[in-house]
Amino acid sequence: MTHPLGWWPIRFVTVRGPSMAPALKDGDVVVIRRAAKAKPGDVVLVRWPHRPGQLSIKRVAGPGYFVVGDNQFASTDSRELGMAEVLGVMVYKLR
Image (cartoon, rainbow, N blue to C red; front, side):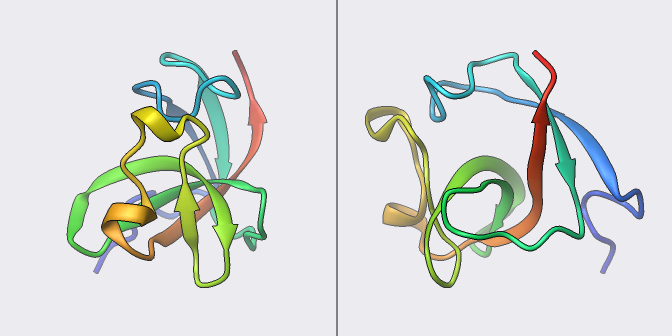
């Protein structure tokens, strides 16, 4: 199976939606590092086992990659979808 980020070690990802407000807004561009190890508090790019075509930006909240959006009222996250597969860690916000 091909990794959704390809073989490049970093990728630029555009944030869509309000789930990470106020830290990240719709339209922000972030740099994701593919090989980085995620720890609680990190912002990460994830994929859901039950929604493999959907990528999301969330924050690691607990072990086993339980991830949540900063805006709990506008986020679909591990509270509904279970544990996520972390694909990379945000290392920088461009705008």
